[in-house]
Length: 363
Image 1 (cartoon, rainbow, N blue to C red):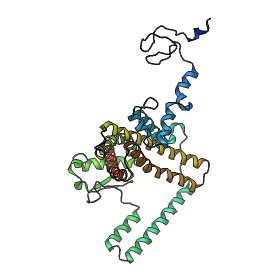
Image 2: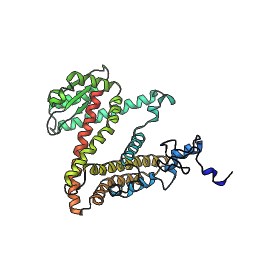
Image 3: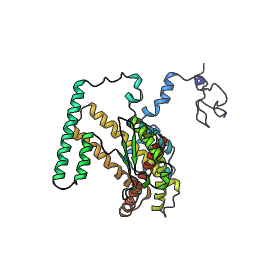
């Protein structure tokens, strides 16, 4: 057999796009020309090739994303794109990895694979009861001290004492505006399974028409019945959507901060897609590091120092990314950075509140 026979394609035309083949790879779409089924090794290489090859697009994207703020955005805007992963694909991949690492609990999500936990022993129950009694005594002593100093009225002291003796707390309070008293109080009774909701009339009308008194009481009872697991799951499901909604809002803020940059809206959007991708990446690394530190018994001061340093790196990264992409001086960039940070805090608060409201309506 001729030496070049191995390089000849099995078919004259590409099976993917129909282009005439001149070698083992299609010059139009890049697909390999062989028509045979790939081997198990090729399947594994296709699956993990980017992870194992140091020169793959994965590492050429993740490494500068982590240590060179703004480089990916600037390179992309200058037309250097083929060497990196597409921005929104990278955002989706890193966000999925983060939520899996942060919130996936094998014992909860794959409970059928694990034996159920044994009920607490009588000794453990006795110990819990003693701890509770000690906490009640400490709270009562503190209450008596406040009453003796005149910091509590007799009525307040009597009400607080009754709450301590019954073991009740203040329940859940949902505050829409911290400057006005328009909060809603949820008081759930574990014995009866009933919930008393107060303060609905102080909510804005656009919320009242969606979350009525009866609806809130029903939600409270459902949330209390499973200790808030359903509500927590719905909130987690809504957070990725809330973060995607936050992206165009922040892009509008950037466009307003840089009106003379002659950049399109989508270019500002690209900046925050890369920043959020970095944010998911650094949080994932923090979680993995803390879990690894527990496994190898790393001294707690060292673990805390690394986590705090990584947390401080996030705002520094944003500032450096703004400097690299928009190429303005330190003073001007710092002033815009402060405005952007405030806008980000406001936007994140509203989107997270939206995620919570959608979760409450969906319970």
